[in-house]
Image 1 (tube, rainbow, N blue to C red):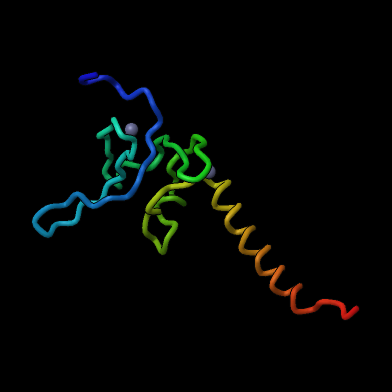
Image 2: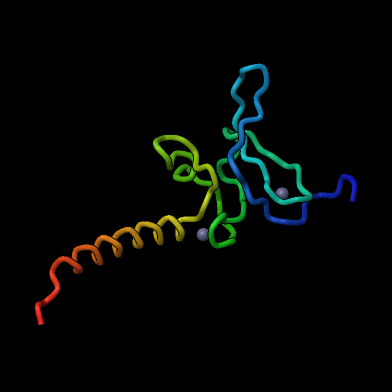
Length: 104
Ligand SMILES: [Zn+2]
Ligand SMILES: [Zn+2]
């Protein structure tokens, strides 16, 4: 399939394709038949596939500044960000509950 327009939603991963010691960070599509990539500074507002749930998502400022002002290595959607936070809270609650078992 030469030069066919991509008919899929890209699933991005952050890679550095710079050469000769130069940094050039892009989001590259990880799908086997796709060689598409987009420079980080042009990625905002683009549609892609969430790396966790596979849903369609838009690369937002939040994605691009998520890990300490740096872009996420594997962008995932607001739902998955939220879910991860909730899991952390639940794990903490379990941990705390375990400490205060009623002595039966
Ligand atoms: Zn792609
Ligand atoms: Zn998701």
